[in-house]
Image 1: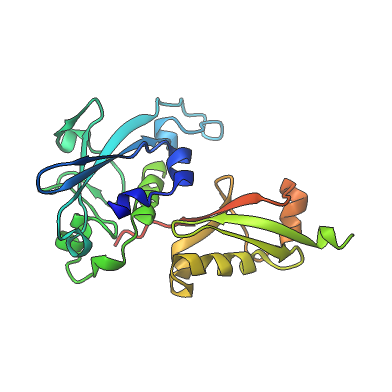
Image 2: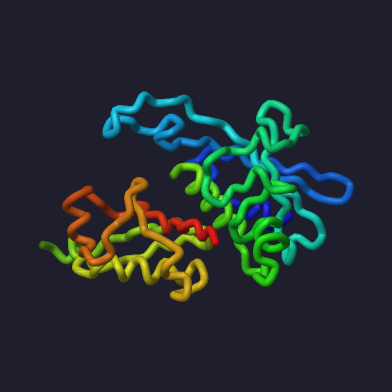
Length: 143
Length: 88
């Protein structure tokens, strides 16, 4: 799929996203690995004196159905050790815009299903850029 | 300062296309930022991006030469045009 192949190598290498696509019967799943490097989870603690925590791993699954361009890419965090398992327990907590308690859980960033089909149905998804979405998610996790 | 020292090739990695262009070091970094925005849809997106070097936001009002002195920028130095998450 052209969009998945468009993931920029610079960003993927820098943040170790390791993108992986799996073709299913009716859709394509894109898995992106994220590492949360905030000061709350393994970032620099020199200034605060806080003890650093181990960086946290998350795997985001973006599900591409036939209407993804307008409806958005259906988002879910999955078990990093078993990509077939999903659930709110695998979502990062305390991250602005990440609504793990919604049903279904959503990410309120342009390009996701949650944004275009749940929170902001009036916003056209066709201009959303996958690289921008992934960078925004990375930035949210790093805050 | 030699003619060669007055110009620098900077590469900007964006979420669209990358740009590598030659700039007069006396220009403000705003010029680099404006050029880079064109790769991600133009000036309407101005508030949605920051220009960064090694994960630090850059002051667009400073001259390129200021950062050449501060960080030792040379031809081929890579900057990043990074989106600001817009959670609404």
